[in-house]
Image 1: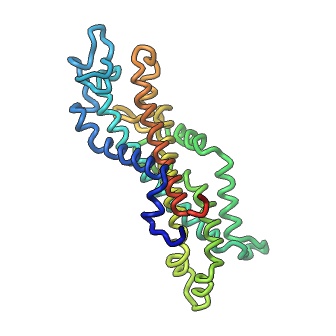
Image 2 (image 1 turned 90 degrees about the horizontal axis):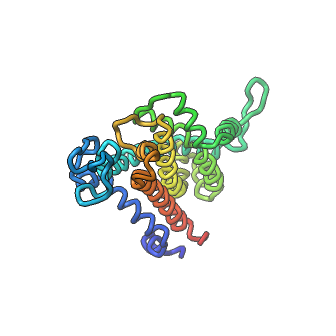
Length: 294
């Protein structure tokens, strides 16, 4: 399939189609879900959102996905949570991709090129990869939870910066390996022989050839960031109420899982579907960009 067009390579992959469909529906839900519900996400409905015994209403005509313990519409709140999760996850993924790509390209390009510091021969690659090794020694979610607990209360901006600054380590390792492969190819060697500067070679030749890997990494990273944001919100160190987040909705509903199971099932299903959708999309993109692995 070396001569196949991108469309021909993408079309047959079931993971790509399924992941793209789930992600597309998620984006559509985030944009139009609150409008379709006809309710405000933070407004309590004491008329149709409350049963005679004071409990929230189950899914029905007035509230399609029911109401929570404060009689707020679940559909509207899930849609607002989707917008917040996608915004934070996308921004944090872009930040982590930028840092990881920069570190990975620099480390891969200067791999095996030592310099002397106070009589000790070291290399940029060794310094950067040792830093990555230290960061990777801590599980990502554990590291994020620890930082979130130290911050106590987080705004949207703080949360995406924390996630972005802790999520680039794996990206750096993969980009470094790709850069080491590309730098030995003939067109890079020719560019160096023609006297092109290192920044020009990195921008014109190296980065375009690692872009496919970055696209796949970024797609999977969004799923990872959605899960991390949900965990922080569940532990009450994410975005604070009354802003709707999936993790907070899950935490608030767990005490009522027997009387009102939809309070747990709905945000849990939203988290599961979004993470699964982005993972399927990333897997489909990986197979499309690397057809020889099929």
